[in-house]
Image (cartoon, rainbow, N blue to C red; front, side, top):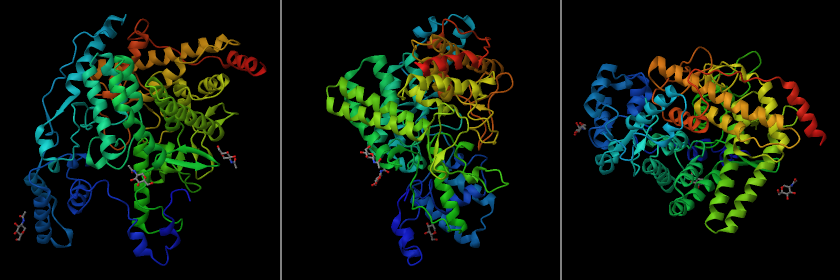
Amino acid sequence: EMAGGGTCTALWFLFRLVSCQQNMPLPPCDSEIYCTGQLLHHVQTAKLFNDDKHFVDMKLKEHPDVVLSAFQNLSQDWPSNAIPPSTLRDFVGLYFDEPGLEFEPWTPPDWKDNPKLLGRIEDPALAGWAAKLNQLWKSLGRKIRQEVRDHPELYSLIPTPHPLVVPGGRFRELYYWDSYWVVNGLLLSEMTTTARGMIQNLLYLVDTYGFVPNGGRVYYERRSQPPFLTLMVESYYQATQDQAFLRGALPTLDKEYSFWMQNRSLTLHNHTLNRHHVPVGSPRPESYTDDLELKQLLWEELKAGAESGWDFSSRWYRAAPPGQTPSLGDTGASQVLPVDLNALLCRNERTLASFHRLLGDAEAAAGYERAAAVRQQAMEALMWDERRGAWFDFSLLADATRTQFHPSNLAPLWAQCFSAPAMAERALLYLQESGALRFPNGVPASLQDSGQQWDYPNAWPPLQHMLIEGTHSHRAHTICIYIYVIAKKLAFDLAQNWIRTNWRAFDEYDAMFEKYDVNGDGKPGGGGEYDVQLGFGWTNGVVLQLLDLYGDRLTAGGLSGTTTSSLPLLLCLLLVTLQ
Ligand SMILES: *[C@@H]1O[C@H](CO)[C@@H](O)[C@H](O)[C@H]1NC(C)=O
Ligand SMILES: *[C@@H]1O[C@H](CO)[C@@H](O)[C@H](O)[C@H]1NC(C)=O
Ligand SMILES: *[C@@H]1O[C@H](CO)[C@@H](O)[C@H](O)[C@H]1NC(C)=O
């Protein structure tokens, strides 16, 4: 009932082959080389490259039909699928070029030596560092060669119309939610043309696919990532006041919003909320135990996990059988209504309302306002935990919230999506009591050390930024100004510690990383499926944003205590409650 596919389920015994076959999971894309097929299977299972991503980023030297036919011939020479790895390696060398050939050398023409932000940073060490981060845009900028547009069949890259800024390392294409912090950073570096090009690429993807794929490769075609495009347009509009651009973009933003509401929503207990879900094929009956089908089911769940941006995390684990510890194989990301996704959509709804109002469409504005109000109510009905004083992901399997700590539990503060000021105060107390503030290097993605990268001990730039902005945006409450002071102080302290972590790691490794370890003295994070990556788009963007917010106060070596005695907070809350 949750995910449709009724025919296949109901007639399963009778028509297992006939009616379920047509519901076989869709491949990640239609390419028989980059997304599906025997060649891919052989190369990846032979582990010719350390990173599976290497092969699918390689360029074809011949038309795919020629390569597939040659591979067919090779397979015939080696019956029973026993192509020796060295033969396979030679084949790949003959028909594929190394990754990275999609781009030509490019320096963003709007790059500026000395953006005003640099002058607003008091600490000379931090100002010098910010100047180096500003330089990094030049090494992360990419321009797609004309050859890719002329022969897209030879590449897995999706040729978007404008140059782009990549995260860095193995991430050599654009990424959806990363781009939000990249765009914010570019705007602070006064690179408005490059920022606009980034946004136009994403708008192009919505116009082409109906939503923004996870990233700019064909193998990302069937899943999205947290929908930040509307907020990118907002950042751009705030920086430029370019109303014509807003008017041009708005229909596409409306279209993306419809995708999330039509294809990623779910009604439960009379409330409609959103989840990550990559519906490829139909859900299987509970008793279905065939290995292959199980893998397909897990495959869908892993894709839903990837769509969340948190790939992977104990946050998405189902409960394991008694006595067992859940692991990656227990990922059930589509069975969770995530707090942060819904907070983000709530903020999108209010932002879209403001865009429509600005451009004179009062009716559309009212529609979005209503949607935000209804969502806020739904979030408070299903996710808000009055006793614990925070929002929690709602598990469809348990029909209840999951009470583990994640920074995303505070996302409604960042989105300003809650009905009573006291909820923000409760949430602040929850954060204080959660145990997540005791690490000097940042707030970890969870308190569980699962070995996955979106878990302890890793701290991620976007999560720090949302937490800091959420705490910083706390509004003064007349009864208890003390909480307001504490919130502002906490936001600054989190920013100070994060800057110190990034700064120390930069000092030591001469690099910016995608994530950091909450322990140690400023070092990159680890775990997960690939080595930690340098670059790094969103990390640089977040640092520039924090320097913009607190440039007059931050210091390179400063370390702040983030925990406060809860007693005054509790007294404050009591006052607020008694009011
Ligand atoms: C595959 O083999 C057929 C028959 O021997 C041959 O005509 C064709 O050119 C071969 N294809 C490639 C790409 O080598
Ligand atoms: C959204 O779902 C509808 C069916 O409900 C489907 O026709 C459409 O292709 C889906 N859109 C995307 C972009 O997946
Ligand atoms: C379900 O929600 C609708 C609109 O939000 C409301 O009119 C209706 O009474 C609700 N039904 C139940 C059973 O709560």
